[in-house]
Length: 300
Image 1 (cartoon, rainbow, N blue to C red):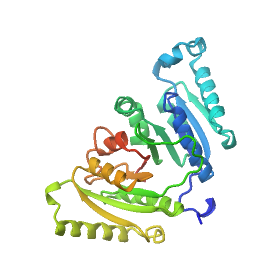
Image 2: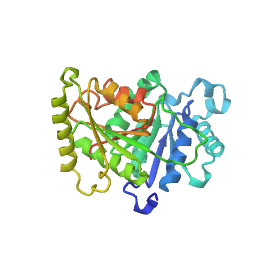
Image 3: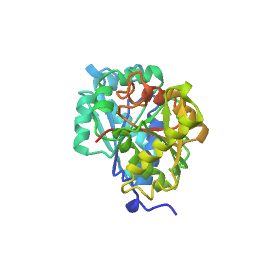
Image 4: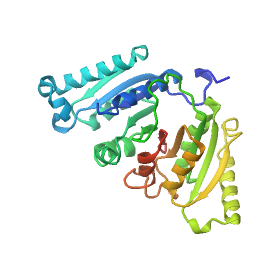
């Protein structure tokens, strides 16, 4: 029997959903609704008006959007909330004219437990990640960030949020420990299989002895950080793979049919050294190509 909301390891009291009102907006809100109902969360649906109050080409066709972009955005958010049926979650709607920086400053007062957003593919990801969103969301915010990539498979008709397999990718850094807490807790709360994966980037070292040594290192690292998580890590499955980290992580997620992929936001090891800031590195590629949501957990 699944743990009740009050007894779960992971508590998501407030979920902030960032949306650009684009094609992925409804898909993101559908997923947010499932998350919110399962965790008993309060939702805030937030939109930052583009710099200079410019609106999308679709919005430019509306006289209201040209005259009052903030009113247009509020009406759009309200319409989506009603269409998807989020009224039972009593979501708070938030629109900022000043852009993403001011929006995130207000979210800090809201104290979200999680930020949820979607990307639109490489072009869309670059649009989000290379601007102020990269600085403020992925580098600056202290909250876990869940990303729905362009290949993430979401069924809008499903109302029940249930995970069967959680893949935790670790570089054995301090940041990975923070991510491990979420991965283990979520897997425990869902009675899901937890897989701890460590990737060695040197493909030519894929020998039996090297694999055994690195597997033991991974197991020892988990034991050293097990404090308070013994129940959650009781049935963890440890794996060591060799090769390109981003491709190997995605390969493992596909093979195990993972419902959630968990990574640290920063770190010193192979997984995070080049991609810790989500610009052109491992995490960036994983988000772009993952077929399941990716949870990025920052270092406390």
